Amino acid sequence: MEDNDHNQSTHAIITKVELQARKKNRYNIYINEEYAFSLHEDMLIKHRLMKGDLIDRTLLEKVMQDEERHAAYLKGLRILGRRPHSRLEMKQKLGQSGYDARVCEYAIERLLEQGYLNDAMFAQQLADQRIAFNHKGRNYVRYELKAKGISKDEIAQALEALDDDAEFEAALTLAQRKWNSTSGTQVDKKRKTMGLLLRRGYTQSLVRRVMEHVQQTTEFDEDLFD
Image (cartoon, rainbow, N blue to C red; front, side, top):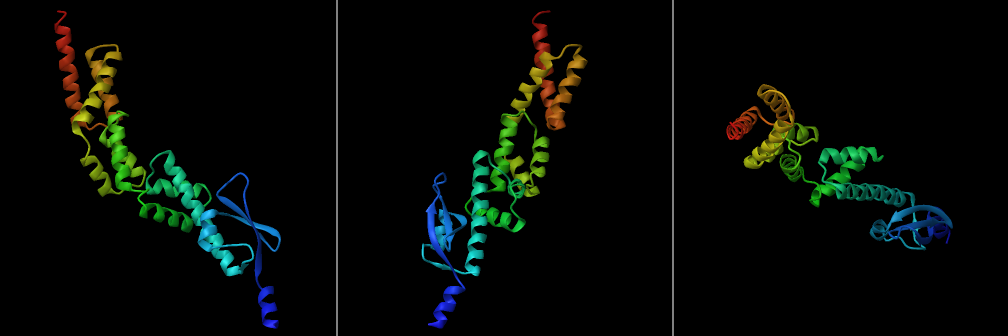
């Protein structure tokens, strides 16, 4: 009888498990009739916490650790819901949210295992978008991917898979727009148009091809009115 009394005194008792009014997936946990903490329902189910259960310090610490890890994982899902992120970007975002390095790493590994984080896929998607819609060249793409923590091999693969024709057409559209909006001599037009293309990250060889096409087209148009 004395052993049972001692066992009861060294444990806290969950006296209430209450669903939160505003957040339907979170529960308030009361220990010894006092509010102690809140939990996501996934963690409540994982640890099978129920009213009347005994909970010692070791279990409580484990529950709190799992709750923080799960919260970081859910935060990662919300971040990815806004746009794709690289692994490095995710680490930075979670760190900015107040999670320590070990918790961040746990969340990232889980996201990787489930396929939500994939640097190779991220690199390819970003490269395609920059080329097709943002009128950026592969030099710009290479620099941006490197800044986002993408490995050299994954950058190389993303650039190798780019559509050369799509890049040329995007650069040509940009060049023609710049050429037509630039006043001055042919030399002025050429200098300013080439400068824009190079700043956008297009390679020198591509810029030369684009400029040859622009100048030939322009000369042909001017000949019509001679």
